[in-house]
Image (cartoon, rainbow, N blue to C red; front, side, top):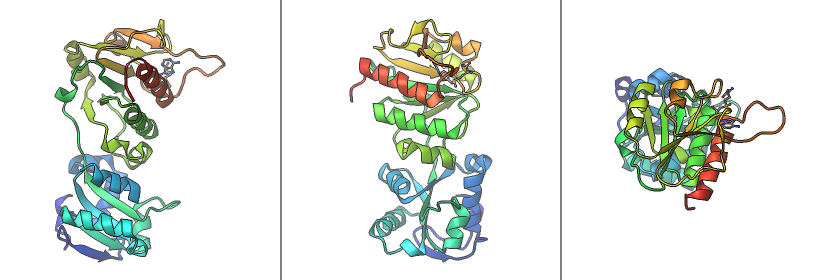
Length: 281
Ligand code: SAM
């Protein structure tokens, strides 16, 4: 939480009632929801909804602020979440509906919102263990795709996701929502393209790139050993320099007129094929 929020007549661990949409803490949370720049500067993000907030706390993600609507104050799950947040030193806000709808989506406002610290994994944590599968996403643009991929990575038991280059923010509200909580369990590493290409030279495993012009059917390769699955950006796919970093380019066959599969769908098809080969559920 930024200095202005900390100094807004609030102390961690206390419960404060807020009815004004221009309360400085609320304004700060709104900025975290709306602006990537603000999330980056503060190293924070917002999770909306009791399930996501509870998942994050259960997974041990540091919570800074918990906000709940006065009308759900008596619900046992909300009381429990508020007690956990207070015990962890978070600021807890009991707010009016008007305040909540000013923070969350108007169409389906959530009654509980949490502000958490972002967590990024170190590139050194990408261990080349036998059977380990990592997914690398080159310049993924769509937060819904990224969230869905994190959810799928979690579901198949892959190790984590590497975000390469200029990607969408995994801590945007839409991306976090699309993960359905998996973001709290899937390690995220970020690298520039240059750093990725450097790092790749030291990766002893195979790198499978997916490409519409791939020469190999995705069901053919032997996916044993440490594996990196490299996916291209939504609009233009993998650029040449990334193609050159691949051990093999694979293609998922298509019939019909569609020129490609959706990125998240292609990632899921690949991961389940790799899982069928090597991962254990
Ligand atoms: N027009 C883009 C192109 O020419 O590559 C389409 C990109 S596609 C929407 C996004 C990514 O999903 C691709 O870069 C690739 O990683 C993967 N993908 C989609 N369909 C695929 C297929 N049939 N075979 C292999 N990869 C595919």
